[in-house]
Amino acid sequence: MKETKKRTFTCGLDAAIAVMGGKWKGLILFALQDGPLRFGEVRRAVPGISERVLILQLREMEATGLLHREVYHQVPPKVEYSLTEFGDSLNAAMAPLGEWGEEHIERIEAIPWNEVG
Image (cartoon, rainbow, N blue to C red):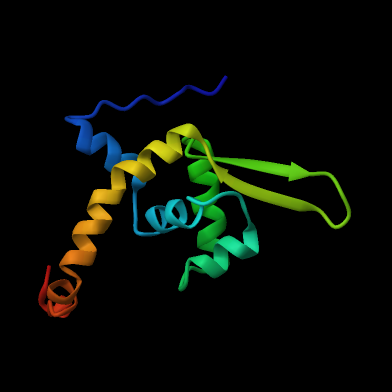
């Protein structure tokens, strides 16, 4: 039998970042905020993501309960991704961070990122 691994977090931010992990999940959540999308639609809505990375991110997000994967048994096969209540609540929590980024985007773009860490 496979042992379930449990994590302990130091604070709520630590827990939230563990679920978010990486740059793509936030963009995927944002893309799904208006309703279900098929794989190709998600890929077009998240510029720069490779197919392989998108597949991995969607699997992780489904495993953590952020999104729901609905398979329609038809020809050709159809799969849609949508936010769960849990995912929608995370999207709502990220909205102020997105607003902060919009407010400071020029300053952030001016940062010499090759000199940072």
